[in-house]
Image (tube, rainbow, N blue to C red):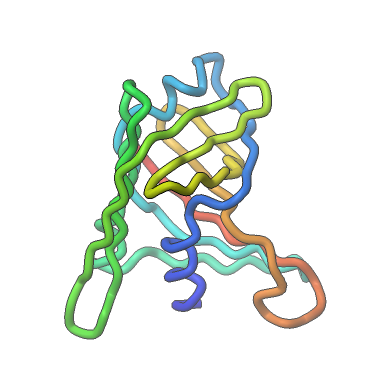
Length: 145
C-alpha cells in the first residue's frame, strides 16, 4: 500500500473527468489550498482499503489560484527525512467535460475528479489491477480544504 501512496503522489495528475455536487462554478470551487485527507483503494472484488497520510505525507497539498496557476507540494517519507517535491504550473477546468488539466514543465495531464464541493476534492488517479486478482482496482486521493 505504501508504494501505491507514493504512486498516488507522483501520479496525481492522470486522466479524469468530474462530477459537480454544488451549484457553484466548479472552477471557483477549485480555488484554494487542498490538503491530503486520505488515500483509498477500491478493489475490483468489492473491498476497500483506506490509509491516512503519515506526518510527512500529510503535509502534501495543492494550491489552485484564481489566476489559473497551481502549485503541487508533495512530501515523501524517505527514511528519516521528509522530502518535498514542488511543481508549479497552470491549470484549466472544462465545465462541459468536467476535465481538470494541469500543465508544468512542458507536459500536460488530465485528472478525473470524482467529487468536487467547496470543502472536498476526490481525484481518481489510477485504475489498474493493483492486487493481481484479474479485476480492475481504483485508487483515489481525498483532499479537504
